[in-house]
Image (cartoon, rainbow, N blue to C red; front, top):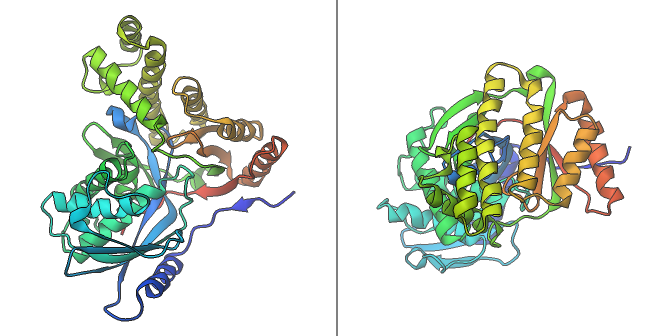
Length: 411
């Protein structure tokens, strides 16, 4: 068998050492030592494009994290550098941060400070360097990991009192931090995402999936230990880079919001599956400007929320091996009704199933990124080989793989 590319997570010691070294390279040895913080990427088990529709989703935090070394300043100057970006040091004033005023990765960092300051919290300028082992553009929430790492860093150095202690995280305070991260991404970075990614990075619990109700931001921690069942969650980074600021994501969100207005509801969460959905689809067929599209989008959202509830029920009952068909159905809905899949994602899902996966689906916003497969622990290598071979046959860029375990939150 040929070798496949594995995406390894750094140890905490390795990540902190790397980012401290990068900080010293960027700012020199003068001045106080920076502190270090980190936050995880996430993979969503099920519940895609439901967050901005007031629905349910079920992510886990990954062991792959983004690290930040940060030192507060007495003025409002923000100086930033990234080990992933070759453009050197960037500088801006906190007072100058506003929608449309900041571009690129710095928007995600400065945007968090801006959002916290907008709430009247005592945030000032800072020097910071970031480094990360969360794959960029893989649909594993590298942006939310960056935002969350900065959020807990600012919370700590400016004594905001929101994150709580590592041993006892303050969920109410972390909800506030997550909301600030969402504002940063929506208003400063210009990506109209929902709040799932930021909540997963800030509010998850090790060994658990995070059942997030996006209607009221409440959460429940659902035990998720596949090792106990001899299973593994294989993540396939298709290397088809996705982006959330190219208009496709925003277009789907706009269609859902228009459909909710047509149906006279605050969000699509109010549309019940079964007869309620049938009635709603009839109404959209009669009243929408683009009825065929509206029907497909709404059908996905409503049935996906129902799939989240069904999968959680199986996990609660210890019937983990029965979850596969729900993953399969989710992918079909995302591919056909929501139209956010792509060749690479479909190839990864189909090859994983053919190689013995119990179920597989794309994960994340779509248009590229990653897929997940529920597989027997002793068949991980077999499935990886099958997916890699399927990509090679089609002349696609070779994928990369990681086995996801439910990790802890930003701290």
